[in-house]
Amino acid sequence: MNRIITIEEEVPNVHKMVIDAPDVAKKCKPGHFAIVIPDEQSERIPLSIADWDEDAGTVTIYFLEVGVSTMKLARKVAGDEIDMMAPLGRESEIDNYGTVVVCGGCYGVGAIYPIVKALKEAGNTVVTIIEARAKYLLYNEEVLARDSDEIYTATSDGSHGTKGKAQTVMKDLVDGGRHFDRAYIMGCTFMMMRNARMAKELGIPSKVYLNPLMVDATGMCGVCRCDVGGETKFACVDGPEFDGADVDWEQLFKRSAQYVPHQTLAYQHKKCDIDHCGGV
Image (tube, rainbow, N blue to C red):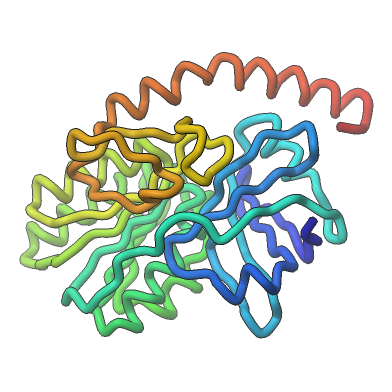
């Protein structure tokens, strides 16, 4: 079990958790993820590792509250313990490519930071774009700016930065004469699909981070299978980083969507229990 050091809601529904995990912090690399289990009745949740401090022995994750298990996680307080297995997956392919564009949305605004930092340390010119529906949902801009040569924001309602999405800014920059040698994209599945398709249209090789449903997260169960380049891959051991242009996004959506009605019903039922009874 790992002790929670701090937990806070960065913006509505997006939570940041710092966990005491010295053994994990020594081994983390950009692109790694963790399996987090709030309690013994909860699901195993795959979450990107957003930062780590080897000296302090801590690991940081961001997560979106969407189901019962993430709701339980969001209601934890400093000092509580959770079960965490990490680091998992393959580390990101990082090299000096030249100029790279990094796009983050939702939980990815926080979780993309190790990629930005590693790309900058490798000698790249890093252009970071983060998106949200509105200004009040943007966060982590100052942290990302420290390791980015340029940072742009996009909001759906136009309340901050460019009106539109991350791919809007990417296209505007390319149309304005900018050249990107590679794109890294992290966020919800729909956001990654949009940006990967835009990158392909603009001739930019892209990397995305797939965290589909997982159970054991060690390649044994096959629950996290996805189709990449016409081949079946297991996101837990073959990823989570994949070439964005090769992902079968429609298949990924179909496999995830079959659980949404059950997840929504369970979330509302459990939320009512918590609100009325005062406990999980």
